[in-house]
Image 1 (cartoon, rainbow, N blue to C red):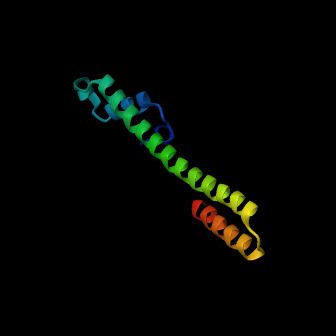
Image 2: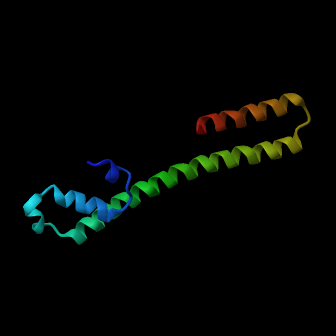
Image 3: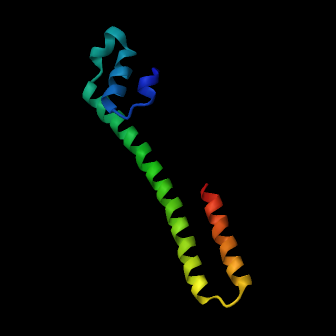
Length: 95
């Protein structure tokens, strides 16, 4: 696999490279089908990465929202420090 294709998210580039593996027999492969196949694979990877990042953002948002609420309700420094430590743990987990 060329370095160019390994960095590409263009399904047509992947389909053409795949078809080139078959040399003279490439005529038996439908290029449109290959483009659709690789487009689906690329988008599935993108969607999975987006889902994972959204989960990380949701965890951070929840931790920060809790920290804000707790800071408004807390009466002691110990409670504040405990809430801050919990928020830091979530942020470390995201790193």
